[in-house]
Length: 453
Image 1 (cartoon, rainbow, N blue to C red):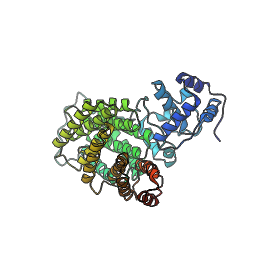
Image 2 (image 1 turned 45 degrees about the horizontal axis):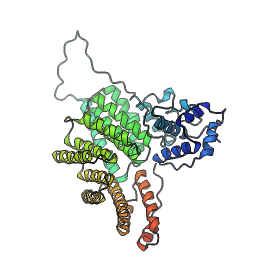
Image 3 (image 1 turned 30 degrees about the vertical axis):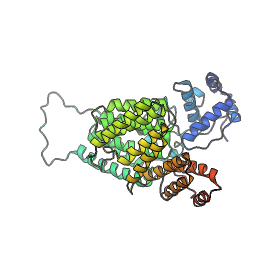
Image 4 (image 1 turned 90 degrees about the vertical axis):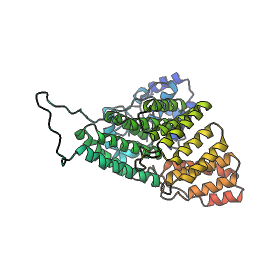
């Protein structure tokens, strides 16, 4: 049973400030929970219990804090709501000193039981990022000593050696995510980061190895995001940005900002998404590879399209395509220096869809599917799912079924909660046409996916 205590006057005061009814608060909590893949059914009775002192189970205190932060336009913590002492709060997150750094969180995530209690934490629109928790002093030399001679040619450069090893690790985990989705290999990456990579960075200091560490942390964020663990993904992207800044790696800084923008867009925070997208574009300038500039401009186009700024969105798309052409010669083995044409076309389709150009969106998405590689099973599945949705938007039920079947053919061994959520939504739309034989056939063959959080 949930813990109880005297009436929660802090929560009552905050609720009064929002001018919301109990029903409205319950609806908002359910909506923020849905962003993280939770199916919540709280109602005004639930809110009444909370006000009387019932402490909601995790992760509801964090959901409430985010709901009020969004409504009031300022950071609101669990402590502000009188919920800081909620029983069952994971020890590595909350309002206490245990949550001091990202490194602390990463170590906590290596415990599966703790991690399971954190997966539903929400994307935060107001809270400040955590510090990384790494001690990275700049190398110094006593003034009275002469400069040391350069190392002999055979000397081992531990920084370069570590960077090379980490670079290969980034490529390996990135390929795994393309094939199997974010739920595959995530535990292994958490263990690697928490027990080996992050501790080693304190010894090695800032340099190329730290830049590769930022890439690994960013990749872990993408894995979390594909599992709809929005809050944990955000922590990773923010930490990747901070690590890259220390390492002097502007590309990863820009990519992290761009990914945070994509997160905000996916969670229906268009103003925040645009602000982050504009920050990424401003930070990129001409100092990052063309492929990264194209990646940023494509996201900026989507943000502008979402807000109805058509001409600016189309200009950003044109810029993205121009940068993509300039970056075609980039090494395809580096996932942080290339922007596949299939992904650019998918983003173009998304922007045109936001602008109401369904025909243009369909053309771009069809072109994207032609360019998907066999190894990119996750991207291909998501593209077929979006293509099915566009077909239904156009009233083409037959094509919608065809695209749904192609997506379902990739469902086996795909560990992606994002894809599963899209499948579920598409199935709901197809059920409206349940009298159509082709639809019935697709629904009969529809697999029942297991949870992949």
